[in-house]
Length: 281
Image (tube, rainbow, N blue to C red; front, side, top):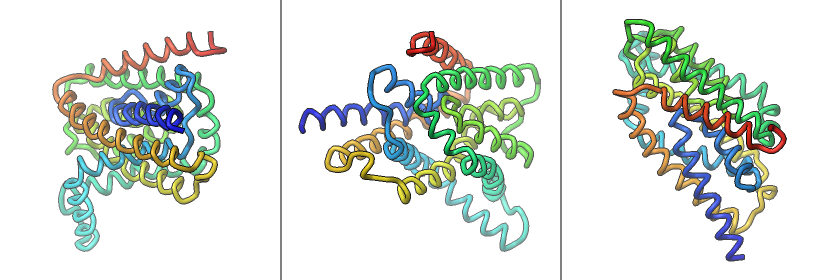
């Protein structure tokens, strides 16, 4: 029992750190969580474990943006009461609501297919390559255009486009934050502003997915007992801590630097994995 517990805790710790970092750094958390166990010979993480890891990053988001989220809720309530857009916080709230709709619809329609993809690591490798193309393409388009718009200049069509990009990220290997940021760059929005919108956009999606699994998931199928509870706790804490750090570091990085380093990483990892994964060479 102690050896099994130690092994499960180490796996949960590593998976939590990977999830926390890659949920916000645009290199695809789903891709890394599928590919890492495949390379190390670990079993594919259960849907319950994946959900708890995502709830860890949700906690990081709430802690990092608690003031912004409170201002958004107050602003939306005031705009409903006064029947006008009272401030930027209210505008952000309605833009986020609009952008959430495509992912919500896509999640209901394609969820069974996405769940089946978790056992096919090669698809996640191709998803990483797709993420690289999105990030690189976004930077190329923004570079060719002289004017960069600040996030305060975004409109309804910008929000809808970034919402559609988030829906595409249901495919394993496609980074949710990366797809939204890349779309923001395609629309010539500034990197830090697009990243902030991407992070806030993840709150309702992660929360809805987590609530659905926790309320309707099969805990007994995941193993049960002390081993499961301890592993879930370690994974959650590691994911929350790493996620909070990733948010702070990435926002500081994007104020002065591009997304190219993440595009190169995704491309390199995807190509290497296609080569080394069993049955893909």
